[in-house]
Amino acid sequence: MRTLCEPRSPDAFSRLDETGDARFYSEARLVYHMDARARQTVRRVIATLLVEDAPAILDLMASWDSHVPDEVRPRELVGLGLNREDLAA
Image 1 (cartoon, helix red, strand yellow):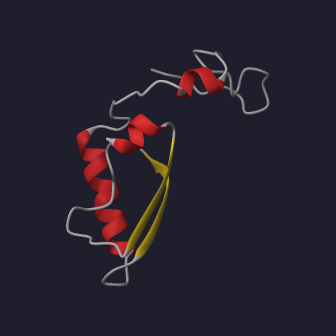
Image 2 (cartoon, rainbow, N blue to C red):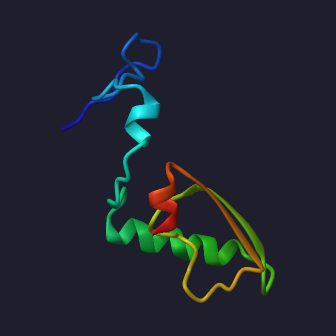
């Protein structure tokens, strides 16, 4: 069982790899960050939040695998991602 550390402890936000972010994000990491069930759940949640037929969508955590449901046809989709290769995919 994984235990959570105390939020005020010095290592509360330490990472397994403390390499600088610029180096870490310079390489594409075309991997899923959630399992299939979680990805489908996120897509369903997004679908319930959309109230327009052709919405403008700002995806602040864009990657190679969009969570915008396939049936959604946005008027505009702007993605902010980790690197060009992830976004291009």
